Length: 370
Image (cartoon, rainbow, N blue to C red; front, side):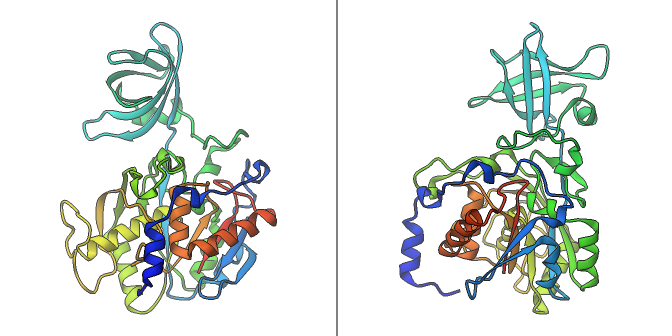
């Protein structure tokens, strides 16, 4: 898409402070809406700038037969592991990512957790695992190895983590999972997907909307604000992604027929836009997926990691519309939606959302960007 030189210069000159805003604390949703699809939904029309105020259950009115709704089927693991050191002191291990050698990259809480130290998770006379610290990384980041392996014990020993801005306990941990999640691996939920109910999915299917599933395991850095003054200097975290040949075919054939690709959440946007760059040969992928760099494809099927950071100025190649939540100031997620909808429109929409009582962040309301 052609962009005027003045807009290109403006995008290059942006500062992280441009994505700051004041949110009254009472606007941060502490508990989810029930039923899930009764959350408010702001419909934002990019072509006209029109803003509508609806509910998530109205989503079928905005989609058409043949559109493809792309959903992230990841599940949140019980990543928070309370424990104690061999000396008896309290400690906590927060799982970040399983490494190829079977060890885990984690965050630790507790004093003197250096190389060789061990933490007991669980009780010795019941289900338990010992975590041995193998490597000290920056700050509280460590590499640990569990004996026995922790994967099969997580549901018994771990807790589902909630974002730090949520202070209310969650009686049902499944409420922080999507109803279509099936592949465990995230430490935070793909929150736009939390709005869907089986009834809403059925209504969309009856409308003729197709579903494509991708997997992106969400990392903890999703919630971290950008600290660099120039957002171009921010180093994006890497997250594991998998897009099956079946999902890629659905997206590609729909695009060829003139239908829209509607991404549910920023995680799906990043997965799809990375796959679109791979399809065009614009992003490295080792090993290269079969059929990559093929002119008729919108996206390539692939499995790997992405560190794609989407800022204003990004050319969207795969996503035509998106459903998302309202995001934290100075976050990479806010920058992504500003890139998709235009910063001026997002600024106006956020100001209106605050003024009209929308609920923000993970358990908050939704925005449909068309």
